[in-house]
Image 1 (cartoon, rainbow, N blue to C red):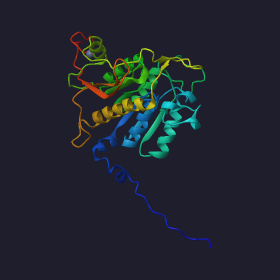
Image 2: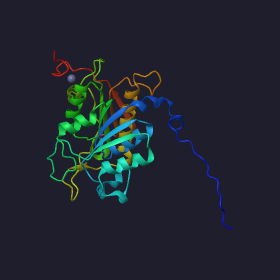
Image 3: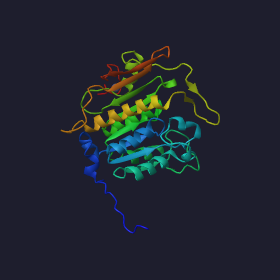
Image 4: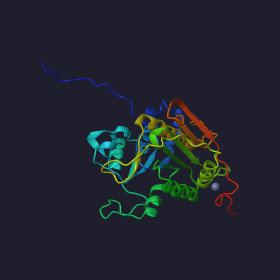
Length: 291
Ligand SMILES: [Zn+2]
């Protein structure tokens, strides 16, 4: 006999119901993050930020999903060939609709391709993306872009968080530049302290750089699960920074740079080592010491 009625269990999905398990993340519900780069670090970070309850997310990446990269990307073969921004945007709209998302399928610092969907100049894209943003999150792993965005954040007076992995995925870096009155240094200071070995560099595989067939850019070897640890440390830093001036929030960090090692210099596996460093102004910094 065919049943004409059925009972469906109702689920609670209001903003308060969804946030009940994460009271420390309440400040994120008014936060806007501009996230640059949706590779193996930026893509999982975007999803995690939306999941955590960030109100608004701007995402930028010029690339499409290459089938060879799915070994360390959140989605697999069914989305290969599609724009990374489009896939992440679609996912967030469907799965975490409380996060407002806007995408820029564009490249910073590259030659503008005539069929590029976004024809705005770089400066305009960055201006648009960071308008009213509370933080710039840079997962491009491109030192030139780190430099540009870190100084753009300084100009806006908002914090900047960058992250990258080392070749081979042997370790990684998450670095924060606060751009407030806390006397912390800038990107120049970070590079200088690292060069002087005051901030210890994470290990890398000397044979870990790679140019794959059919790809114009160099990449590196390394596992998806090791990179996820770096991406999640980046998210932790972003969340802590956004909650910093709120009475109730995720705890504040008393350091700015986290260098992470999964291996020693010989490539032998270690229990993950998280090395925290503060980032004071370097006495020779031409930017921080500018009168
Ligand atoms: Zn400086």
